[in-house]
Length: 383
Image 1 (spheres, rainbow, N blue to C red):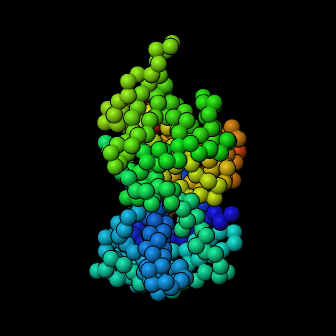
Image 2 (cartoon, rainbow, N blue to C red):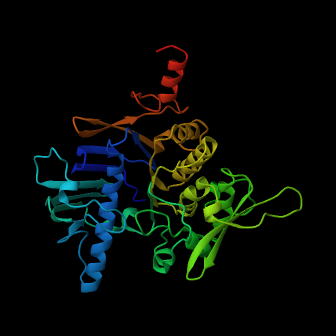
Image 3 (spheres, helix red, strand yellow):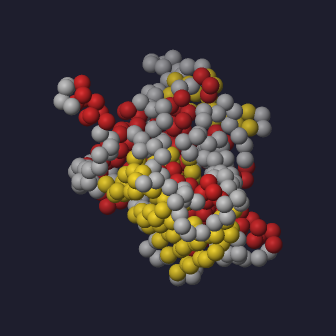
């Protein structure tokens, strides 16, 4: 297994020098503007640079080592940073940016020359030890999904046969999840990991299980992917009591936002193979608290099966749902890393939050999902 267990970021955006441990489930949380999204962007930049340069290498019929003689691509389909001055840590006295990854068997480091007015950084130095199958990292394979906080409920989902059928991607554009309708139409009959099976369905195929987990958010809902001309769409209906059958189908624009926002998230988790990497921003968007808690359970179950998931969240229900999953042995505490981010002197600082085997918080930081307690104290006159 080539799961990433360490990420080191130097001179990137608000990160002067940040070293993070990554586990099967890694949670990034903290104040706005403290550097959480930049952690995910560091991985996205490496992936999109590798994919771009692998295509260049194929066109020239040359087998380049990863990023060798190439560059860090700041703007492409996964993310867009801007130009060099938007990417470099503002207080940096160095003229480089550096990303490093470690697995149990591999250490990779890339240093790039910082050019303030360019949309790429030339490779300055790389070190891969031991030399080998570094492009087998899930970050650089088809066993990868990215879903951004910017995903939108699509009125007409897009079509991309290569991305869906060959690369097994749910999103091609900035993590929007715009291919989920085609993905479910094409891959909906495949079997999921039985450990992720929702007990409310007797079936083990992807579409049935996506529907079953969506019913944890909106009871009795049916998810119906359909081809619509040259594109695809999602329709919905609800099962009615008795023998009346389901309601008439209705279109995405008439569905609850929570259903459509979480659809690519649930699909990505259920379809992920062992040793996949999922990067998910704000999975809680538009979900009620119970739905968020159930989604945290699914995320935890998947991480326990060998899928690596990095989640950025502002939700105490996602956080507490993961704690509950630890307490009820749905995921081992050793498989969870929680990083709380703050901005100190314009630099990101991350504190790792430790949990007990009962899900209790062992490392407390002011601001760590404590606003409910603060508000309650204020209402009771205790502040």
